[in-house]
Length: 226
Image 1 (cartoon, rainbow, N blue to C red):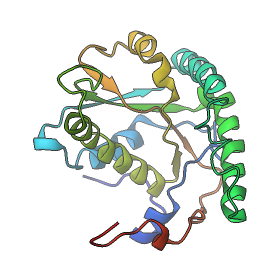
Image 2: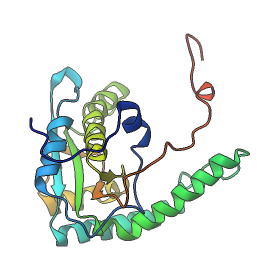
Image 3: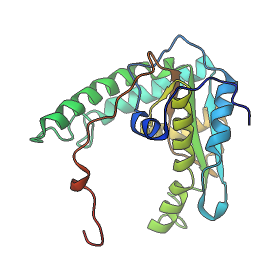
């Protein structure tokens, strides 16, 4: 594989710790070529899948009208989500960790921005996986874990490869409130393939990103016992 597109000078740890959910710093006016998408995709499909099934398909949306329609549906879904208890605007609201609440407030503001501007992203990625976890034969923990575990690593690899080439991405799922409508719009065979995310793709305004604030790993790390 030839690396035709220039890459940022990031070592592995920098890449892993600075691949952020980019929203306000997406450059909506700079085109993203099919070549750079394919280059990132060639790395993404090196990810592992359950039983090496490789039951994935990746739908890129660059058509302006289709992006606008998807953006409209995402905005409608976000309006419903915003009032839910699990919304980013409400989580950690009562935390005594001021760094965490500050980080959450910034994330909520950027989520609002993306909801209003999703349709402006020059490219979108919808990762899809064969099978549906809302069917009886796969609606169990094993079936769900195997299905999602066979697509999320590849999608994340794409996002890492994109970051290395100066592109920003954000993992979103609210469009799934309108999954069937979007499947019909894009010709995705709804009965056979499940969409798992909607990822806007754009070059970033500036390439420097810092690690996000996280509580100490000791608060989430367990060895041998919970």
